[in-house]
Image 1: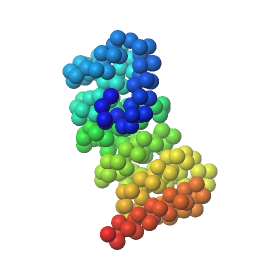
Image 2: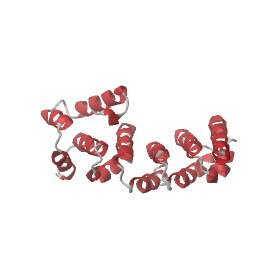
Image 3: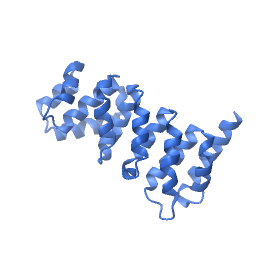
Length: 199
């Protein structure tokens, strides 16, 4: 894996998982070192390719800035398995495709998929796109109900809104102050908003 795969530990976990899924096959070893973008892109379009092969090809193409990986990476970003979402988000952040923020916003704000919205929320924060703050506000608001579902997603929204520094986030962050598990993060986020407004 290259430097785009994140930390050494992230890279090892990613390669070890895919190697296990591939059963240590020769096909895995070939794809892992292939320098041919056409071979990698072919994996995304050829029928009958296993998921591990599609994930590896999409990740490598995405990190290389090849937009043919976009659709596959978005599908992986929306996967139920968090292990697949993390590398997909990383590759999408490096892909540079203008559709990425819209796709991440659609996934984050889908109320039927909120349980799987952690990586789309983090990706939106990293992208700092026009869609980012509105999507995080919209995702966070329904999570501030008394039963408080999906606390990790809510926390990621609060932290992301602080980093984005968008003043439109103030009402929802003030509402988050009432939640004990979000209070500290919401306080920090509101402080960052004030600093952004002053600066």
